Length: 200
Image (cartoon, rainbow, N blue to C red; front, side):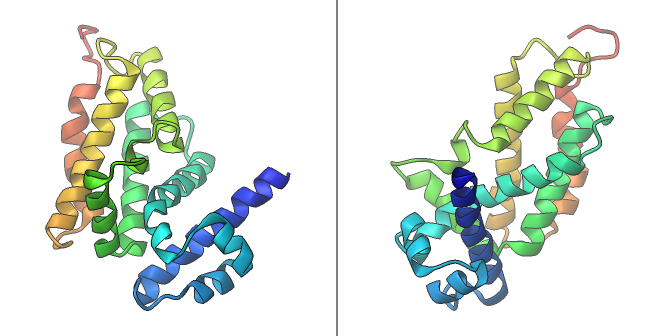
Protein backbone atom coordinates (compact mmCIF):
# COMPACT_ATOMS: atom_id res chain seq x y z
CA UNK A 1 0.00 0.00 0.00
CA UNK A 2 2.81 2.37 0.89
CA UNK A 3 4.46 1.71 -2.48
CA UNK A 4 1.19 2.47 -4.28
CA UNK A 5 0.78 5.68 -2.32
CA UNK A 6 4.26 6.80 -3.37
CA UNK A 7 3.51 5.94 -6.96
CA UNK A 8 0.23 7.83 -6.80
CA UNK A 9 1.93 10.91 -5.37
CA UNK A 10 4.49 10.95 -8.16
CA UNK A 11 1.76 10.31 -10.72
CA UNK A 12 -0.35 13.17 -9.36
CA UNK A 13 2.59 15.54 -9.61
CA UNK A 14 3.27 14.52 -13.22
CA UNK A 15 -0.40 14.80 -14.24
CA UNK A 16 -0.81 18.17 -12.55
CA UNK A 17 2.37 19.52 -14.10
CA UNK A 18 1.49 18.57 -17.65
CA UNK A 19 -2.05 19.90 -17.30
CA UNK A 20 -0.66 23.24 -16.15
CA UNK A 21 2.02 23.25 -18.85
CA UNK A 22 -0.74 22.86 -21.44
CA UNK A 23 -3.11 25.40 -19.92
CA UNK A 24 -0.69 28.22 -19.14
CA UNK A 25 2.64 27.27 -20.70
CA UNK A 26 5.78 25.79 -19.23
CA UNK A 27 7.48 29.11 -18.49
CA UNK A 28 4.41 30.49 -16.72
CA UNK A 29 3.96 27.47 -14.47
CA UNK A 30 5.61 27.48 -11.05
CA UNK A 31 6.55 24.59 -8.81
CA UNK A 32 4.18 25.95 -6.14
CA UNK A 33 1.27 25.78 -8.60
CA UNK A 34 2.13 22.19 -9.48
CA UNK A 35 2.30 21.28 -5.79
CA UNK A 36 -1.08 22.89 -5.12
CA UNK A 37 -2.76 21.19 -8.09
CA UNK A 38 -1.26 17.81 -7.16
CA UNK A 39 -2.49 18.28 -3.58
CA UNK A 40 0.89 17.37 -2.17
CA UNK A 41 3.73 19.01 -0.23
CA UNK A 42 6.92 20.75 -1.28
CA UNK A 43 8.87 18.00 0.46
CA UNK A 44 7.12 15.33 -1.58
CA UNK A 45 7.71 17.24 -4.81
CA UNK A 46 11.45 17.57 -4.22
CA UNK A 47 11.64 13.95 -3.09
CA UNK A 48 10.76 12.91 -6.63
CA UNK A 49 12.02 15.82 -8.73
CA UNK A 50 14.97 18.20 -8.47
CA UNK A 51 12.92 20.95 -10.04
CA UNK A 52 10.47 21.84 -12.79
CA UNK A 53 12.93 20.94 -15.56
CA UNK A 54 13.04 17.35 -14.34
CA UNK A 55 9.37 16.98 -15.23
CA UNK A 56 10.06 17.41 -18.93
CA UNK A 57 11.37 13.84 -19.11
CA UNK A 58 8.19 12.40 -17.57
CA UNK A 59 5.98 12.73 -20.63
CA UNK A 60 6.33 9.01 -21.34
CA UNK A 61 4.90 8.37 -17.84
CA UNK A 62 1.86 10.38 -18.81
CA UNK A 63 1.47 8.30 -21.96
CA UNK A 64 1.66 5.09 -19.92
CA UNK A 65 -1.01 6.38 -17.53
CA UNK A 66 -3.25 6.85 -20.56
CA UNK A 67 -2.54 3.30 -21.70
CA UNK A 68 -3.40 2.03 -18.22
CA UNK A 69 -6.78 3.77 -18.45
CA UNK A 70 -7.40 2.38 -21.93
CA UNK A 71 -6.63 -1.18 -20.84
CA UNK A 72 -9.63 -1.02 -18.49
CA UNK A 73 -12.08 0.12 -21.18
CA UNK A 74 -10.76 -1.56 -24.31
CA UNK A 75 -13.16 -4.13 -25.76
CA UNK A 76 -11.47 -7.53 -25.31
CA UNK A 77 -13.36 -8.91 -28.30
CA UNK A 78 -11.49 -6.62 -30.70
CA UNK A 79 -8.85 -8.20 -32.90
CA UNK A 80 -5.21 -7.39 -32.20
CA UNK A 81 -5.17 -5.16 -35.29
CA UNK A 82 -8.22 -3.23 -34.03
CA UNK A 83 -6.64 -2.86 -30.59
CA UNK A 84 -3.50 -1.31 -32.09
CA UNK A 85 -5.56 1.19 -34.08
CA UNK A 86 -7.71 1.97 -31.03
CA UNK A 87 -4.75 2.59 -28.72
CA UNK A 88 -3.04 4.80 -31.26
CA UNK A 89 -6.19 6.83 -31.91
CA UNK A 90 -6.85 7.41 -28.22
CA UNK A 91 -3.24 8.29 -27.37
CA UNK A 92 -2.83 10.67 -30.30
CA UNK A 93 -6.15 12.33 -29.42
CA UNK A 94 -4.83 12.90 -25.90
CA UNK A 95 -1.53 14.27 -27.19
CA UNK A 96 -3.20 16.60 -29.67
CA UNK A 97 -5.66 17.93 -27.10
CA UNK A 98 -3.57 18.19 -23.94
CA UNK A 99 0.17 18.26 -24.71
CA UNK A 100 1.82 21.49 -25.88
CA UNK A 101 3.62 20.73 -29.14
CA UNK A 102 6.77 22.62 -28.13
CA UNK A 103 7.13 20.44 -25.03
CA UNK A 104 6.56 17.26 -27.03
CA UNK A 105 9.19 18.45 -29.50
CA UNK A 106 11.52 19.13 -26.58
CA UNK A 107 11.12 15.59 -25.29
CA UNK A 108 11.68 14.04 -28.70
CA UNK A 109 14.77 16.14 -29.41
CA UNK A 110 16.23 15.42 -25.98
CA UNK A 111 16.00 11.70 -26.70
CA UNK A 112 18.33 12.20 -29.66
CA UNK A 113 21.14 13.79 -27.68
CA UNK A 114 20.86 12.36 -24.18
CA UNK A 115 23.59 9.98 -23.07
CA UNK A 116 21.55 8.81 -20.14
CA UNK A 117 18.23 7.00 -19.95
CA UNK A 118 16.08 7.24 -23.06
CA UNK A 119 12.57 7.05 -21.63
CA UNK A 120 10.96 6.41 -25.02
CA UNK A 121 13.07 3.26 -25.45
CA UNK A 122 12.59 1.90 -21.93
CA UNK A 123 11.34 -1.65 -22.53
CA UNK A 124 10.02 -1.90 -18.97
CA UNK A 125 7.36 0.71 -19.77
CA UNK A 126 3.71 -0.35 -19.81
CA UNK A 127 3.64 0.78 -23.45
CA UNK A 128 6.02 -1.98 -24.56
CA UNK A 129 4.51 -4.62 -22.30
CA UNK A 130 0.99 -3.90 -23.56
CA UNK A 131 2.08 -3.91 -27.20
CA UNK A 132 3.93 -7.18 -26.65
CA UNK A 133 0.83 -8.79 -25.21
CA UNK A 134 -1.32 -7.62 -28.13
CA UNK A 135 1.21 -8.80 -30.73
CA UNK A 136 1.46 -12.22 -29.06
CA UNK A 137 -2.33 -12.56 -28.91
CA UNK A 138 -2.49 -11.62 -32.58
CA UNK A 139 0.05 -14.24 -33.57
CA UNK A 140 -1.62 -16.94 -31.49
CA UNK A 141 -5.01 -16.09 -33.03
CA UNK A 142 -3.57 -16.27 -36.54
CA UNK A 143 -4.19 -12.53 -37.11
CA UNK A 144 -0.59 -11.33 -37.26
CA UNK A 145 2.37 -12.71 -39.16
CA UNK A 146 4.64 -15.09 -37.29
CA UNK A 147 7.77 -14.90 -39.44
CA UNK A 148 8.69 -11.86 -37.32
CA UNK A 149 9.09 -12.11 -33.56
CA UNK A 150 6.84 -10.29 -31.12
CA UNK A 151 9.78 -8.04 -30.29
CA UNK A 152 10.31 -7.16 -33.94
CA UNK A 153 6.64 -6.30 -34.43
CA UNK A 154 6.60 -4.15 -31.29
CA UNK A 155 9.73 -2.30 -32.37
CA UNK A 156 8.33 -1.64 -35.86
CA UNK A 157 5.06 -0.35 -34.41
CA UNK A 158 6.88 1.93 -31.94
CA UNK A 159 9.08 3.30 -34.74
CA UNK A 160 5.96 4.05 -36.75
CA UNK A 161 4.31 5.95 -33.90
CA UNK A 162 7.47 7.95 -33.21
CA UNK A 163 7.68 8.84 -36.90
CA UNK A 164 4.19 10.33 -36.76
CA UNK A 165 5.08 12.32 -33.63
CA UNK A 166 8.37 13.64 -35.03
CA UNK A 167 6.76 14.71 -38.30
CA UNK A 168 3.88 16.39 -36.50
CA UNK A 169 6.34 18.37 -34.36
CA UNK A 170 8.59 19.26 -37.30
CA UNK A 171 5.49 20.45 -39.20
CA UNK A 172 4.50 22.66 -36.27
CA UNK A 173 1.22 20.86 -35.80
CA UNK A 174 -0.10 22.13 -39.14
CA UNK A 175 -2.33 19.07 -39.49
CA UNK A 176 -4.37 16.89 -37.13
CA UNK A 177 -2.12 14.21 -35.64
CA UNK A 178 -5.06 11.95 -34.83
CA UNK A 179 -6.78 12.29 -38.21
CA UNK A 180 -3.61 11.74 -40.21
CA UNK A 181 -2.69 8.69 -38.16
CA UNK A 182 -6.21 7.28 -38.54
CA UNK A 183 -5.76 7.49 -42.29
CA UNK A 184 -2.17 6.32 -42.61
CA UNK A 185 -1.52 3.88 -39.75
CA UNK A 186 -3.60 1.12 -41.40
CA UNK A 187 -1.32 1.47 -44.44
CA UNK A 188 1.77 0.93 -42.31
CA UNK A 189 0.17 -1.92 -40.37
CA UNK A 190 -1.04 -3.78 -43.45
CA UNK A 191 2.15 -5.86 -43.54
CA UNK A 192 1.69 -6.84 -39.89
CA UNK A 193 -1.36 -8.89 -40.79
CA UNK A 194 -1.20 -12.52 -41.74
CA UNK A 195 -2.31 -13.23 -45.28
CA UNK A 196 -5.71 -14.89 -45.50
CA UNK A 197 -4.23 -17.77 -47.46
CA UNK A 198 -2.17 -18.64 -44.39
CA UNK A 199 1.04 -17.97 -46.29
CA UNK A 200 3.34 -15.60 -44.41
